[in-house]
Image (cartoon, rainbow, N blue to C red; front, side, top):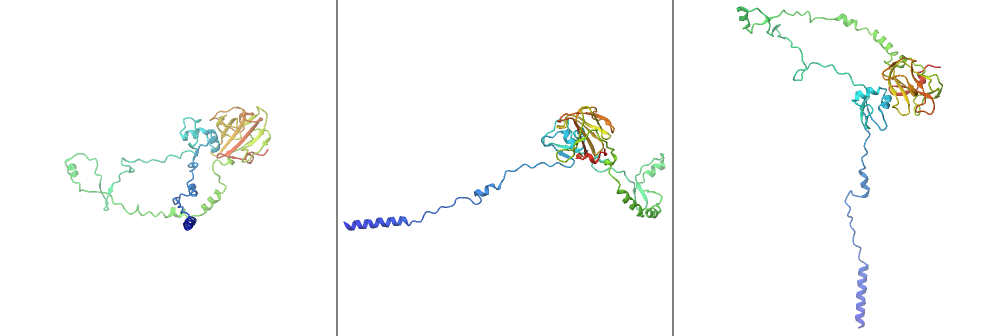
Length: 322
């Protein structure tokens, strides 16, 4: 009896020892290659790129108006509307591409045949022996002899022999005249003072109002100068030109007049009380074009800008000293 108990106890001890020494079951990694959590951000969400305008064009941005675009580009808003094919100048959309430079002049066209080739006048066929065999047309009075001659296509019509004199034309004298280099040196000297058309020295600028400067020009917050004054004071054209805009369509400028002086320069007169000119009207230097006011402003004043190719420039560099 005692031996059975001992044997049972020994077997139980062996069983427990066997269970304690068993190695844990291996755990296999089931993740696929390249599918780890760190590899997921490799495909970011694509961000739409900002469209880039072609040369001579402008892409409308949020908050743009055609008047603002025209002022920044130094153009007449009506011209931009015409170049861009706009039926309504007040309707433009964000992302729309507008032409802000005049189209190129049409190329000179040449007559084209039905097969697409250039039409050139037919030349007479002349053989090396100086005999022209074509064309065979001509006007000869009818006779039996003329009819007989017409039946002989081989009979060549001999042209007068062309001497070598026309070919031998050694125009040595004109060539010798073109050799002097001195005129070239003169051209170089003249090229230095030459200035492009529409340069500021051809514009005779004047002050548009008699008030004091209460705010100067800077490239960040003030694109021109502010002149003090009383409501109703005269606002004068700073130079001769043509009115390209007169109205209230540009936010922050109130009643505004824009005068185009040439292909490069514009001048702007803002915050007026009343406008005395219309679009398309020609004005002269010193002509009264508006009355000073405080529209879209905290006080009566004239905000005056000069723009060169649409970019604001310091009026103090163009206006005469007081």
